[in-house]
Amino acid sequence: MSQTITESIWHDVRNSADLCIKCNICTSMCPVANVTDKFPGPKFVGPQAQRFRNPHELSVDDSLDYCSGCGVCSQVCPHEVKVMEMNAKGRYKLYQEKKAIPLRNRLLGRTDLIGQLSTPFAPLINPLLNQKPIRHLVEMTLGIHRDAPLPPFSFETFRGWYKAIHHKSPQRKLSAKRVVFFHGCSTNYYEPDLGKLAIAVLEHNGFEVIVPEQVCCGLPMLSNAEFDAARKNACVNLDSLFNYAKEGYPIVGTSTSCTLSFKSDYLHILDLDSEEARLVSQQTFDICEFLLDLADAGELKTDFQPIEVEYPYHAPCQLKAHNIGLPAIELLQLIPGVRIKLMQADCCGIAGTYGFKKEKYQIGMDVGAALFEQVKQSESAVALCDSETCRWQIEKATGTRLIHPIQVLAQAYGYHNK
Ligand code: SF4
Ligand code: SF4
Image (cartoon, rainbow, N blue to C red; front, side):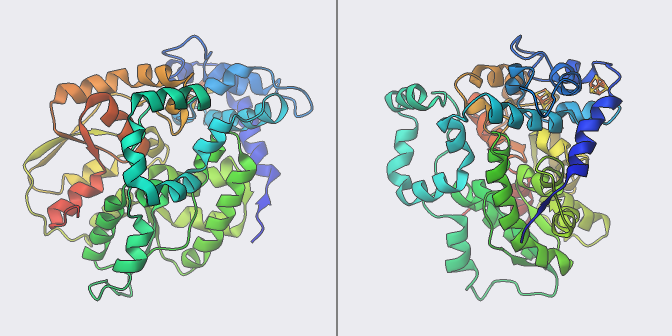
């Protein structure tokens, strides 16, 4: 399937610069501008610089590369200026003209390749990931910070489990009610138990779960200015998902980043405009959003076992960009005994691959400091967050175990990690 790159969407983003009234709300809310002088803030590198970002001239300001892409600016702008989207495109232009994309950034964007090469050797590789001399060497040679959170690889991939075991299991639910599950790279290579529990929850609610062919959503490439590579992945996923979307099947994911890519980034940053991209966008749901919709319709099973726990919960920036409120909180409060304490901090600082980079690691840690303190003060053994890289960052910084909200729901239904 060939996807059209649409100038009209690019114009929407570029022209939204004219809506800026210089109120500076975005700058006051930008997590990065609040902790470092290296980044002048979203108004400066976004709508202000955009006026001088002539397609035929060199980019005006390299400080743009310190934008983490968290998206807070676009969410808080009262005039709907698409600041984060503008910055992502500005970064693409910057790297096209002035800089070679570092090998480190290309590697961080190749999540499928890294997972495919590493999971078969997980028992050998995992013990090395936290060896100080090795991490120093990796920092010196590649520029991945020695203290950045590198989660252990799973020896068994989620797809391996699904194809070899679950798909053939007589217990597998077959139903006229079907849902498509996009597991993404983190569930496949690092957290397969999360995918297994997501399937258990969906099947418990009467759905047959389809796991389609898929590749990385492309967001790690997009945020590292590799738009062409990200578009290739986007087209593979759209090819795979479109027919299901046309059948009216919902597409759900446990990764807020993957689902946001389908809902918005393919259209508004990669400029892929087609019937396929629009339909897949409409049919995609965050898994908690999907289950809360079921609950609102009176169709969610509520045979919950009580869990007497208060969980700290961090709502990741990528989830807020969905504009769906905080469905995990409403959903989990249906479980008798569960109490959720919403952390009052905006960002954990990892922002996908941003906080892994040597020159940006400390900025990420400073951004997340308030959140880390709140999680520590909660003295809880387990905290909740919907986004994988945020979970890894918070867990590394606080020592608290982080899980996805759907794992609590699964537990309440009587399913546990295997
Ligand atoms: S919040 Fe919006 S309108 Fe205000 S300065 Fe930022 S981009 Fe401009
Ligand atoms: S995307 Fe985040 S880091 Fe970048 S300018 Fe907007 S608020 Fe700041």
